[in-house]
Image (cartoon, rainbow, N blue to C red):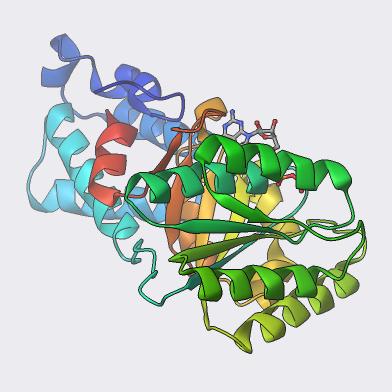
Length: 296
Ligand SMILES: Nc1nc2c(ncn2[C@@H]2O[C@H](COP(=O)(O)OP(=O)(O)OP(=O)(O)O)[C@@H](O)[C@H]2O)c(=O)[nH]1
């Protein structure tokens, strides 16, 4: 299995060994200290790190675990169980299914939309994108480039600064009229006008809902910013009716533990994971696979 930058395999090599002598090594106080440092550096956050360690210690005592290799398996299982407490399925059964993509500037919204459109297109779905970030001409152009690469349709604003809600409306109308399965709406991420932005988003939503229910509101978070990025995105979680999270830039991050931290902090499932700038670098989230890759 390819090792990822966010994988703890490397950090844990010292703790768990690399299939060599350390696999048979015995658990001692150093093991627990090293494990704690590894969990904190991976951005699980102190609370989660502590609760994971507490549970592992208790299990290790109960089952008289002495080998580091057994501890590794227990940790993998514990993480998998906690990661799987949230449902990562995208709900796209309505037709058209409308996906609203929200998040602060530069986290990777447009890129995620391009990748998602391409993926859904490869499944035979008909997709239309809506460029509802209407204030930056460059944002519209960037989305149009992705639409071309993913070979999907796009609804652009008729002029710069057009009401984002009207672009969203036109996108969903086009999806309904032309038989698209999925409409994905890109939105602006300006935080400096937080109140205005949230009003704008709720208007976008209201206007869409005149024609079709909103199937998913995906909040995009940049994994490299860790817990900070989450603080910035709080307004979206409070006001935008978020149904799922997308974690981007996990390829450039050593913060694999953020995935669990973010789910438990927000109570929202991670539904997609971005690991690169290429069109194929987006995957669904599978707790089993993720836990295995995380622990190595
Ligand atoms: N390494 C890496 N880079 C990514 C990923 N996703 C997005 N990026 C990069 O992050 C930068 C910002 O991405 P955008 O998609 O423009 O972000 P945005 O949220 O739409 O930005 P605004 O439109 O300014 O709000 C670009 O350079 C992307 O190539 C990822 O998963 N991995």
